[in-house]
Length: 85
Ligand code: FES
Image (tube, rainbow, N blue to C red; front, side, top):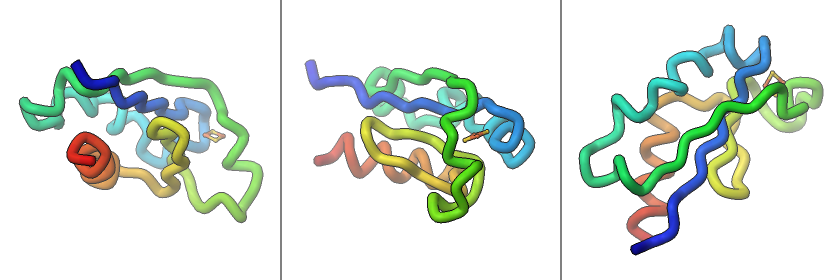
């Protein structure tokens, strides 16, 4: 079985109010074929909101990759690319 894709959603205040709360419901929005490929976790502030060069909240780490200005759509799109790779 292939390795799970780790999705770490920042639930710190800045990210939460900017939409991380929606991303935490990711599993409901994943297509059936990706549901068992993802391991979803929440994390307290990842520190990126304090550095404007990292982009805008909400932040999500997908494996080792930082996604800024994340949305359910952008996260699902990236998971799909990684799952197909
Ligand atoms: S609250 Fe998300 S990086 Fe700080």
